[in-house]
Image (cartoon, rainbow, N blue to C red):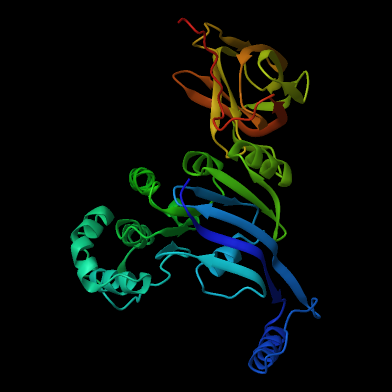
Length: 389
């Protein structure tokens, strides 16, 4: 195990709910601090704990994922780790040079060029001009900004700013790298490069990664922490923490008609709402009302994860099944077999196609089900295999 580079012990931060109180309390705390008086106290009127009693450590070679719903305290904690704001209670110990991507464009001077901002940011991290010179071309190349590096950053798109910020932070190889949700802005190709670069740096760097994307957390992080109302609700193995994250969030599934052409969905139901382990058979019953006669329609049933990503699909045409509809109510019964999905919540989406894939019906967010497995793993789809030797 590498040495501990990040250590938080009992870290807490409070804020006031309005600007006047915030300024008054801030001035009062400043005066007490100058006079050497203890400013540790209970919450005052209109104050709340954004972060409360948070402790963890991250070693070189580890990546800690911070997850939680909006307002859980993730960004506040990251700002304290980066020294932007000070904790009201507890201590934070950081060893080595720190790179951070906390907010889109943070740390960039908009009127300076990309090249000038590379030198500014590198100096803030703690690198000399000679060290930056040695890495300059690698930064520009990684950010894919060769044609625009001498253009003012204020004229960059959001994706260009993200590419430049990550390139500076990653190519300068800091001891500690703090990354907030900003990678969500980059395109797919650049995110792939970022993941590859993080893998290359993992053995020499301690990472803290904040994201609302659980696949990203599973892909990058060695362990995770779930924050809820500023406190640590659970920490440890990614899969267990991610499962708790889903249970901690109230997901609203509103049935969403995208296309409803001459066919109306009356009902989609399953035998149960909770399934355990490998599902040998999941029976889906669909009731439709048709205003036309249809022959040889193709039905698609999708299982959708909480990330709003399709993770499994039934296509009736691939199974040699076609459906005929008469005027009025029609009932379809489909047995889906050998479904092996990870623990989590899933919803259904259906489409009905006819005449060269003309979509007559498309409905999302139907009939949430829960799957519980003995083991919670990182991938949404589990594979069954046989040992041959």
